[in-house]
Image (tube, rainbow, N blue to C red; front, side, top):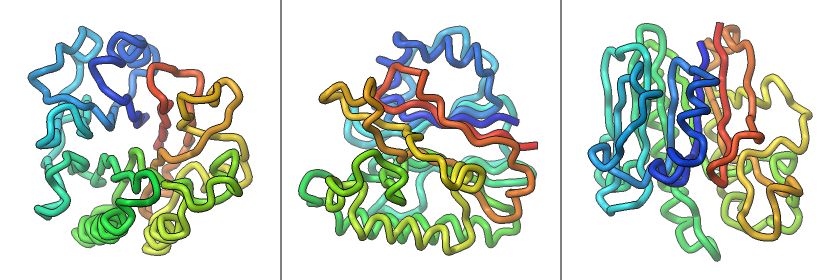
Length: 253
């Protein structure tokens, strides 16, 4: 089973920048998109999406945030948001329940310039951690994926010293992601490739950052301990363009 996650930075734009071709070549069983920036009825999907059922969670604010999941298999249940009014207005979470796991697609809020949204971000991190634990307590393991908007370790970005207090690499955000992992979840890519440097999933549009691979790894597949034995591969696909992020994938046996 192949699962793919991609922050497309606007699904309507990415449809014209290789998303249909990517689906045709990769043929994932499940495709999770973040930052869709559209409601379902605003998007004319091409034929490549014909074999998928889709589930959307859009922000109240038009053209902002939003997540969607495209799946070949009908889920048992679908849940939009975390059930928390303070965190569910921006269309950032979808959960699908399958027979042997919960799948959570997430677009974590950015702490923004000068960390002006950091207090809210830290509230979000804790709410999301508890949400994943509540799903796991139901008796099924959890897979979560998406743009977590944090580079956890220095190895996860090209210039850690220069970005020490930047959004996505503040001490607080890194510690928040650490608490999530300490709660019994695992970063699938680091599980398989603990020392792999230069592996990034996001690059600034400025200063030719992508061509020079001056990037950050902020897109993840995380999973419960009980699923580690099923992990066959976790990949980052920097050759796929169309967004300032590239897709990441998880293959389960």
